[in-house]
Length: 326
Length: 174
Image (cartoon, rainbow over all chains, first blue to last red; front, side):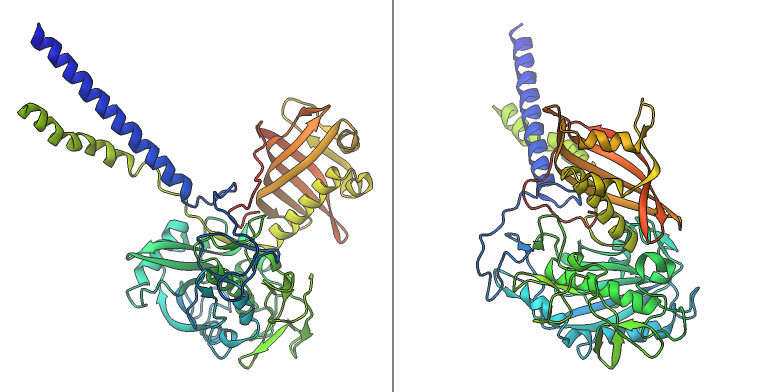
């Protein structure tokens, strides 16, 4: 009888310890989930630092705020790697071409966008250890022949990046990887329907890799192009490359100032480039009739303005330039 | 005594199936910040403009955004004519204090556009809490250079308005 009672007691103790451990594990799992970015609206649980200098020169209170713990990319220049996905050699649209490849790689060089007064706007952002350099540079490219097919989702995108980061391209946590898809590729999470591109990050090969998706906007000119013929269009109506440079600018700016989605954004959740999305400021007209608002690297460009985090904040075309609302 | 030590040694092993079972319960949603399309940017602004007109009791501004035959469609109710809806939201009984528009999707059909979004609002009706979370589908019709609301289909999906009070983590879907 005593033996039976002892067995029952032991069984109760084991059951109690088992349930207690399960409960504690569940609690720690929930805590972890709360801290992880979930891509949903709601209080972030982060704290705003008090207004004042951050790092060397960056201040708060210019319509966009630094959030404690967030970091920016500070390399000088920030390396930009490109994964050309799909068919970029005579593809479905005239802009799926080697001409687009050359134009965009040149656009991202240190002697073009990478060294421009426009890119210098990013120097108004920083974290507790320093500011963004305001320089970027195209640092390598690979071609991917539809390894995930012509239709894929966000998880496949991570696979594409992990396939090439560290294999063909360096594994570099200080840089930004761009996955640029030809016009026949569908990103099923909303390309052309809700967005023209996006940026995010993931742990790949043990490193925090920042990457962005930008599709050939000739798939949806009405949604993602400001004009059907751009300043660098090889012929009338071939605006994909120029349209992509605009989205690429947006994504690279944000991937540098808010690489882990936890550093710089405003009370509505808008990052620096979101605050000037499709706002271009004053424009000029090129010989082919296309509008442009920037000239560097031997080309004219039509790219959105950037939110300058100084002088009260505003959208401008170059660091220290006048602010424009549209 | 040995049995106790044996049990303690075996205890972590007992938990292993549990830990392994919990780990891959749900893959985390991949967070991302998007560049909104021109349509999403434009219709997000229009929806916010309309809500601001309601909040500020600007009847003229609100009426200017409706067609002559706008209807507001709710579950288990007859379609509400636009004029009646304007009167109801302009009455002193109703007060829209704040709102958030998010997850905007647009299907552009040329002269019409279908816009779906989530709306969280803090509002009162006759002094009682009337806010919550709503899913809204709006049909906008092009009228010259402007867009006007032709039809609204709205459904309440949550009763408690949980409006962000501090900085929100960006989603790019605002």
